[in-house]
Image (tube, rainbow, N blue to C red; front, side, top):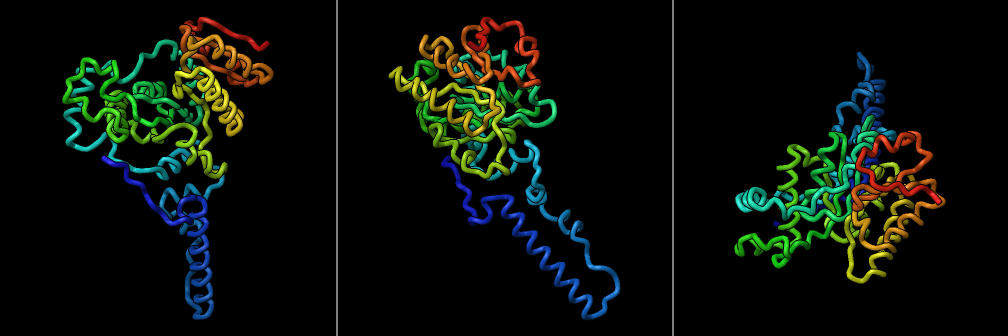
Length: 330
């Protein structure tokens, strides 16, 4: 089940560069046709350039337009990433089906508090696709949840897919023969995809999986042209946990600073509000001086919102009734 990497010539890795290349060919052909017509006094008119452009492949036609929508940018990005059989092979299906049916609890850790993000996501999704980057996917339960909030949701899911392995306590009730491949990234990733397909039918083309540790695994997005790449609207952090508290806090701080540097308007959110007092202080201090407030649901999920964004002037109503704590800017 090894991932198959799509190798393309350098000029084709940028959809806009590829479109410009094709456009140059089209223009040269049109000019040659016009010259030939003049030389030979052909009757009729040369083909219109607009007609030729409309006949180009749809992805190229989209790339020619410099004002791509968020939805279009996401689709171009999705098609540029590695390709592997979605949800594993046919031989994997019986095992995956059995795991989904008999051991649904292994696919995540519940959704407590996450509903405070739903109203914000729906507000963002009113006019175009809303892109969520989720760091820490596990076996796809949370990813399926985001996809089910609104049909305009798109997810960039980042995870090394090395957990759980066969010895993890979440798999204690799974038959030994079914545990053998757990911990192998290809297996865990395919199982996550299969589970997402079950929980969010037809949503496979709304997800990009980036396999590896963050931020290295997210480099394809960060290194893409800012004119071409989709913007991350909401960044959900549920990964990078370490037994070394200082190392974990350094990772969290570097992560949220880095994503805000890349996408200044991004909404930050995540799990583990109860991780430690130092963690909570880090999140609140980051919000200070940035015109942001931190809201917390069920003492678990937190979300940081820009107070001056007119879309969220009624943030309390968007967040719902389960907001247990509101931390205003100091």
